[in-house]
Length: 226
Image 1 (cartoon, rainbow, N blue to C red):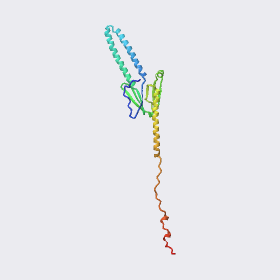
Image 2: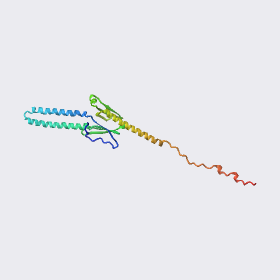
Image 3: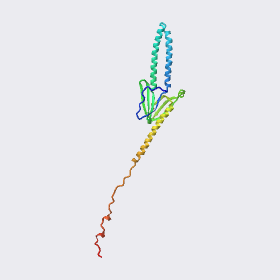
Image 4: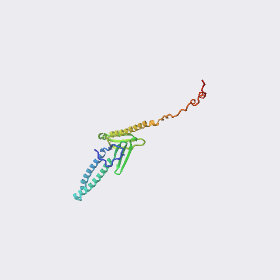
């Protein structure tokens, strides 16, 4: 179970539905947690074990009071460092929507960048798992390739990178299929309007025949006598 992202989620347009949110694997921050615990134990042993031997002119109560203050300051520094590392580590996320891939990259406490990539511009997604640890704990890296220039979309310590890559590719195929369907509908509906329409027959009246207009010769002759 991953901790809640301390930063605000990526805001998508109202029409976009979030399909997948990718957070880093805990193993990437586990080393910092363990190193901090080991450091606190080592410093505690050194401070409380060496200071009484160094400051022999002071009473044991005074020496332990000084040692406690020094150790407390050190603990606060270590906790502050761990807190900043925790915020920075868990702030790096990917968010997949129906039309785009959004990336939040944070390298320090006050340095955060948000990038957006349209799925139509995506060429390929590569998942890599190098080494025994990545195979055992099922984490790795994701890289999205785009046309033209080298992609800035690289996600380290990705949990189950093969599954995440497959979901991203499925979303890309879905949007490509939707575009093909829209283009097909536009072709079907626009084709009749692009074809030339036959002209309607003109309503032409046929002029009367000259024979019907010319008077008959027999009409002008006088009637015959019996």
